[in-house]
Image 1: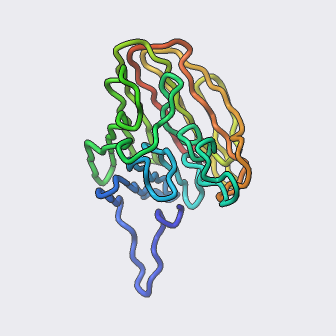
Image 2: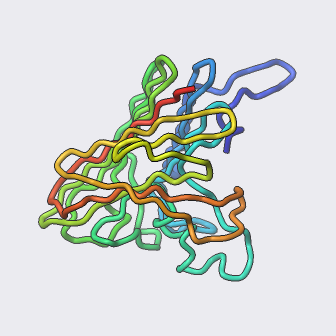
Image 3: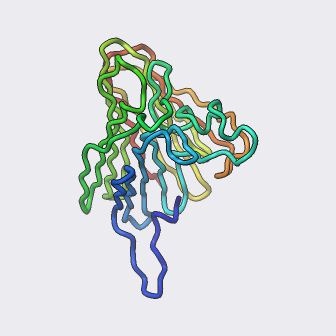
Length: 250
């Protein structure tokens, strides 16, 4: 939520710290310190949390006080809201990998583990092992690295690295409640009423294509409609690195 990133107004003004690490349930908030702050919240967690979403490795990008991309939030509480087929609750509706056409599984054993953190004045870096969230025996490594470089206008990078014992299909997504423009096969511009952020996509070890679609869920509590900007390998691979670099452009 945007208020997590902002200055707290008290009788005596005080700023929130550059980062907050809730290590008991694996959540990090990395706050930008630019004139227009560019920040990210991300979580490891597990897939049996209260009112659970299958969302190990999810994140939310915030520029100033506007959510730009990431977690699209929950559907309103009504009939079917907690159905396992509700795409807003499954990992299909979150900015996390989809491997061999398989989503994350549900249960406390399906989790993410923060394996490394590096917090400094200029750069916050978090590494998560998200392999345990998937039931894929051929998958040997699935690691997400999130870096918030706070210099200039800010740059936030999401990098997914996988290794398998046999070729697997692989993909991920940019999720957004905002307008966007697919500029070319590697660049997307995310737009709000006041801000624009460029997402540059790179693949190492594979070719990919972008496929966007509307999330088929009505009555999202964060508003709507929501969109999934899918990034999919064109061919199966035994290893690869997918990188999405977000940079404010206005």
